Amino acid sequence: MGSYTDPNDSTELIAMRRTHAFLAAAALAGAALLPSAPQAHAAPVPLGTCASGQLCLWAKPEFKGARQVHELSTLDVNSCTPLPPGTSAQALANRTGRPVTTYQSAECAETGEFQTYPGDGVWLPQSPYQVRAFKVWEH
Image (cartoon, rainbow, N blue to C red):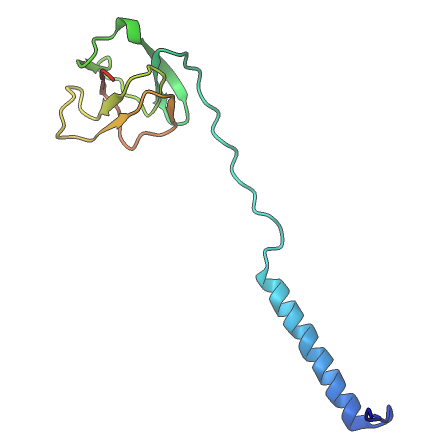
């Protein structure tokens, strides 16, 4: 048979209150570890305008500033194309359908930084270096 607990027994009442207090404190401590609200995420960078068959370069990150547009039909494939003197780019979109290598050097020298981007619609909001020249490659 079950045991009977006298509700007037102070020892049992104190033990029950301690258990309830412990459980309440544990629940509050656990709740403090949970995030109170979802973290707000930064809005995505809007893509700049760049049509199919073009390589577009922007002077500032996040597709801002002056934009240079280079048409695949007017570029010498496999040749170094320097940007106009005194200019550089910090963002790009490659919609040429061909790989494009960007260079820190205005002469396409591989002693500085350079990176090749595939031609399947790459949008780069911030280059890790100032782009001063590029090459469009055959497939």
